[in-house]
Image (cartoon, rainbow, N blue to C red):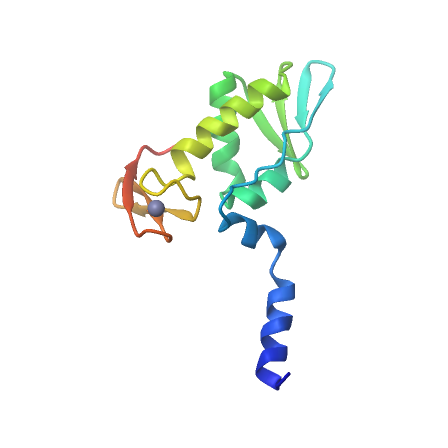
Amino acid sequence: MDEYEKLLERARSQIPEDAFKRSGERFKVPRVQLMIQGNRTIWQNFQEILNVLNRPGKEVLKFIAGQLATAGNFEGSTAVFNGKFTAETVEEALNRYIDSYVICPVCTRPDTTIVKEGNAYYLHCSACGARTAIRPV
Ligand SMILES: [Zn+2]
């Protein structure tokens, strides 16, 4: 193995596995893990899911809270919603977010970024190059 290959190997080992999963055939989002505490729902693996989505937490939190018609806040690496929700309900809201803001409607791959141009937002796909107009969260 020459120096260049060694460098490459080391660079690869430093990329989190999720980076590979994201560009794989299947988009693997971990199951939503919730804990009910009093009258609040704590989303325990929120940060882990954000890492897979590659989207700002503020945006995702705002969307999910809107879908659940409640208020949401960050607490450390968790998200906390007022009210009691089931993992199914939160997963449904999360899937709606993924469909609208992560998955490319042209090639159905998740290798996208959100680009803002003036007042317009686009979902830009690095897999197929498509640019799709989206509504801001
Ligand atoms: Zn695409």
